[in-house]
Image (tube, one colour):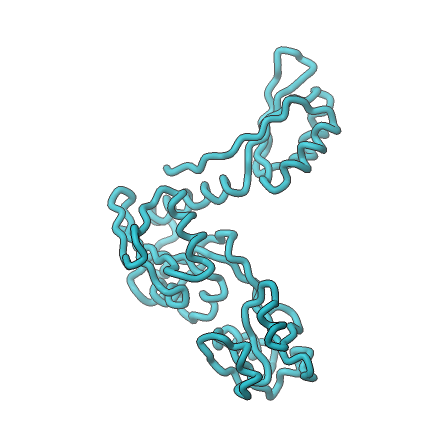
Length: 283
């Protein structure tokens, strides 16, 4: 069986569970289950702490896992990033007190940086020639400056509200931009049939979540203009109609742009626009 590590909690957990469920995999029936066997799909799911997944995949007997790109970098393991999953996007940034003179990367030299991602931050500082002390904390790093443990912090930033409430401000370039990724063990061949099947299913779900099919009729002399409006995920399918002056077009377009594309298509002469949701393949 293919062993898959799944986040048991945190911001990545529910999107990961939804992704696997829509791909046709069996999930746990209650939150106390740590392992779920799915013999129909020849997989076994292990619910693990997000911080530990890359370690299990890189050093243990877990074949693949869903975790954050930042967590993978911080793990220091040999787990390989196999596929981006497009959710759980976040930015990792430095933040200092509002009244602190620290406002650039160079200002960090000689300072104390509190973070839960000490390897990631240490490697980043070394890469940029900055000599600073990295202090590991398991959580609530925004309190470390006020409590005298650090001069600044490095942490995940989404809205920035938590940092502002702690009297901190973000500065400098992002240390890393992250999102959920599928990672694989260095001992698992990327062409392994089980991994290929999993990847294909997940990609099918992601495509179905992000794209829709759009069908419309367009005058033959306006086909080029319509195709330019809707470049789509793949090349459009263009078919002749009984009325030789018209053609039928089918194209896969981003779900988020449907309304905008419909307006633009009507402007170039399209008619009978139909939008259809995609169904993910479970082959």
